Image (cartoon, rainbow, N blue to C red; front, side):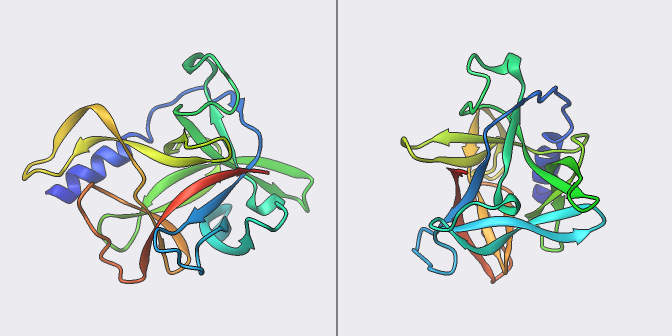
Length: 207
């Protein structure tokens, strides 16, 4: 029951349609490991092919000292009426966007990230597909002058015996690298059931 409630609350956030007409400057998504695991720390994320015109988000060999590449450059698309500063706005709902190139690079299709159930309970995969009909809103919180961290707004607090809705909603950064994939772990108290998963934070570095 708890899994069903958390899953419904998580996926419900993907269904709200907005304009998302303002695109940020390009940035890389760089991992920080709380244990300073060198396999993840300061490594950039990039797309990895999982299906027809679908990409997941995976660990790459690129590090923060390497120059940005097309494959590791992402954008945050927000809606202009949500904020006064329409570009690169922090703490603002938006689509995580990766431009998919096709026809040998002649065409570009903006691809929005959405959560998708994985085979492991409570773990959600991140899938990029062209368009924005299905998407997961993400937010960025400014931590200092050089970087922001990516988080999700969660309205359900499951720290008690029965999940309850939280007002205001809670900023949560339940990001994990599982094998090579970036995953989202649902809930505030659950630990991933996949032993390959390691906790990380996801930071932006401007491209």
